[in-house]
Image (cartoon, rainbow, N blue to C red; front, side, top):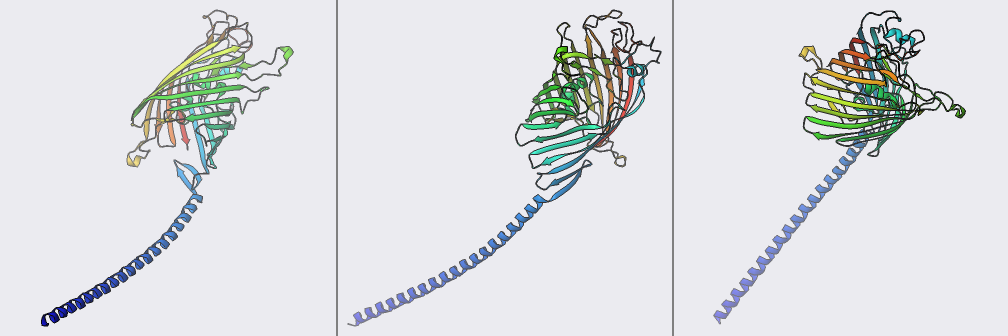
Length: 510
């Protein structure tokens, strides 16, 4: 009995202990849960505060970004003032070019017209006098001011007026005034501008190797391109290629009866390219599809005369006399085709072009004249800076000095040596000296020029260029009254000459 009581008492004690422990455990678990819930509630409260702060900061940042996008900025990079909106959708940059040339023409002393047969353009008494004594002096080659920029993000524009020119020959005129839609890979440009006609023309006129283009390239440029040309064109380029085409009319300074219709097309490619070298190849076409009419188109009189004329100066414009000249050719059209080759390796660069010019006469009684010309030129920057290849134009622009001119720091800018040889033949059935001209012959002359120069780039806006030219002109007189009545040498007489030219240009461009 006693044993049973003892067993029962033990069981009761054990049960009470178990219940006590279970209660304690339950009490502890409840306390832990409440603590965890309180901690979670505190964390949620902290996160809510952080989210509220983040929302406020984000709203402020968005407001700041929007304010920055709508803000107007003013910069002055390379002396070029630019005003732009923060998002770049609208901008205007001011552009300016000033080029002053001086020259010394070294030629034999002039004689009277009756014995000194050196001549200039056909039918120009002033040029015939000047050809015997080209004028030393100075000339403002270009003095341009204008603006360029963007509108609504996808439109580009450019408006430039030229106050300079070759003496009284070229008064002030519009150089460019165009608008371009750039929203597609193929850009569309319309207005007054100079379509790129060749590799020589692809270089900026402030950064070309010499102060004037090679004679044949300059003459081809004037067929359907050149400054102030009315045109509508397409432009596109990739990492290694460039294609452009334009339908053109007259220049802004030319007024005719029926306006000229022309075409300029060009394709360029970089087939080989390394870290500091490249090869450029290209081809171009410059066409006069319909020459400008020289008078009313009267059917009974055989239609209006449509003349074309090819002539040029000895690659300098201080004196405007042209020493080679085809005179007027009554033509149905002109086709000029060119091939391009260029190369660059570090600070050494070279380029060459060949052009053939075919003129289709309006009458089949005379043979169609063909002319050609070529040049090769090279530049070497002594200070190491390379010329810059611009794929947007597929041309070589001037080097930029790594250390702008600053004598206090013993910095002298960049110095480039330049050389070029060019030849341009405007003869067709010219025959030999002392012989009369054949029917349909054109004695426009052949001009060969060796040029040596030095370009000193003091900084990105100031340049000084000096050059020497040895000019050889071989040209026969057609006789009659081709030059001026009473002063035209006999047929077959040599009316060309040899001379040397020393020139200097100072330039400020931004």
